[in-house]
Length: 113
Length: 114
Image (cartoon, each protein chain N blue to C red):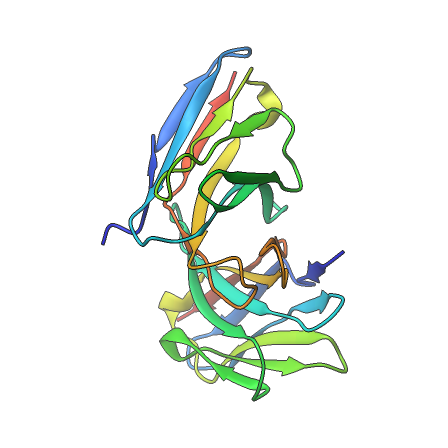
């Protein structure tokens, strides 16, 4: 069975500072990992994904994520946070065959001016 | 493209009533799925479909039925609503069931069961 953990319910950063939202995963086989963002009263939007290749993945809105196989982690990062980045962030792993996704519980990111 | 659309946006039901949540996509995606989102619990998969005529159960299927008669539509039926089904429901689609494809989500349906 696959699983995802987001150890922080809430992350607070000041605008202009770097941000990290943590995610660890458990899968059998090669992982397909995703980050999604959810703004209030909206559906989830895809940010980036890791399939294979470079451990540093670049995505939308200046976000990137670092895949670490030995630590089974896929942390979301951004060098300089914006107030508009404030939202709920979900890490997910997707099954290699039937395509079933498992989501973490989400991390609320608050960026203060 | 409208992407993934869901109706209604809001619904209030009484215990025991039935209803259908509608989901449609215009991207010719093979894979469609339904999730429920509850506070502090992330998204949980209810049912999914890898193509027209094929559906399967997810993590929390009890009390829900689905069918997939066309590529575009994937309705979710609540057979006899219970207060435990109060939640926000999201429909999603992806190009295929291949694990490396991202999902596109609808705007959600907020359901309250009294």
